[in-house]
Length: 114
Image (cartoon, rainbow, N blue to C red):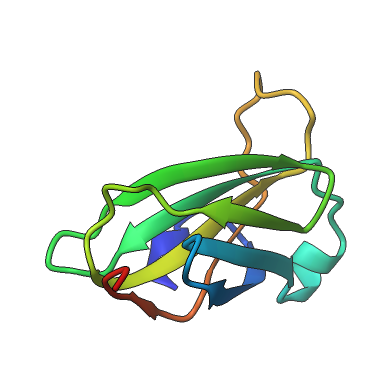
């Protein structure tokens, strides 16, 4: 996958968007290849990616020592097609800045609140 340049471990990312009233995503991730399965991840950063002409990542949350999170969507978010990306780190120290695994969910649609 092109967006994973330099990262050999891949995560499988799933998104459940059933709480449309609160606009909350339930996100989980797990190892998708042997390289990721051998690693223990201490922290993960969660990003929302707009899948339009100029895809950009929007930081949503930092999760420690667990492979899932419930994350509210930003109130100012516009309707459209999105995906979630998870960057996982094996070290509890942010000083080394080593990204150990990354994964992207399938796309999903965010519509109006009405």
